[in-house]
Length: 125
Image (cartoon, rainbow, N blue to C red; front, side, top):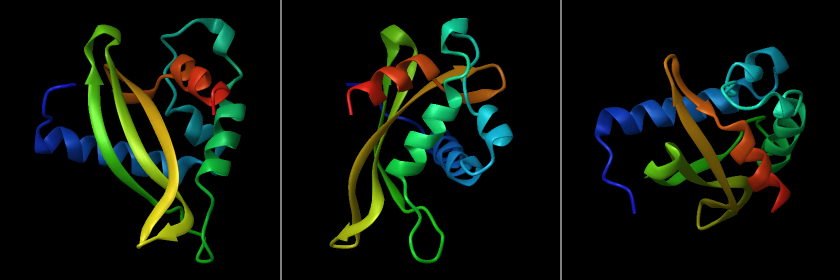
């Protein structure tokens, strides 16, 4: 599918996903994780996006969000990075059993969630 990613880039993506998890509870901080290069019609959707992410990534009894990145690949035609995750608090063999996908786009100041692609994905959940 995509080409293999370097170790530094993978760590950067892992840090970005951890930032999403940490900022999910704070609307102002979470908003900074979303790409604004897209059309204005998506403006205001970040609350819905955040609500769905919180539902898909529930907190466990310790108040932590459990997830495991399973795959990262590029979709060069759309200049997207796709991050597939296991999420949730129900574990099978120690691995969360929910599935979730993040669509990221690169911006001058780093990775951001692609709001348009995320909203399309969430509508199909």
